[in-house]
Length: 160
Ligand SMILES: [Zn+2]
Ligand SMILES: [Zn+2]
Image: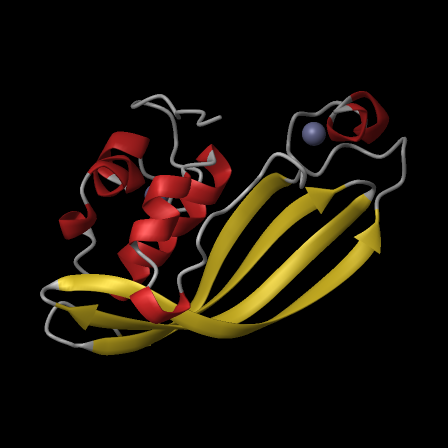
């Protein structure tokens, strides 16, 4: 099930821009990802929105999974930080993006760090692959939920 962010809300990708000025248009049109970082951000937002279509079409052919199923794997995405980019600009044909994404899975706060490789083919950027590391820590039930709701964890994402 795809959930859509509202146009005026702040984009989930951590850019602090409005959704319609950030990942929104890219999710509608792959061509608008002019740099590897823009594509990376839009793919993160697509994970948040469970937009499998965008995730799959922006994955390079040879590495693309046949399908993605989010139904048996419930995570709440908390945020994305782009740490470093190398090349991947408008005039480049390849580049890397190092990022950390954070999500809640069951009672764990997970921090996934990856250096992703991107390539441009026929004027479109694609995700190739990346080696990731995930660090996990247990969230206390009575702590504020890391999703930012200001509710206790046990009454928020733990209860989902
Ligand atoms: Zn965005
Ligand atoms: Zn929560």
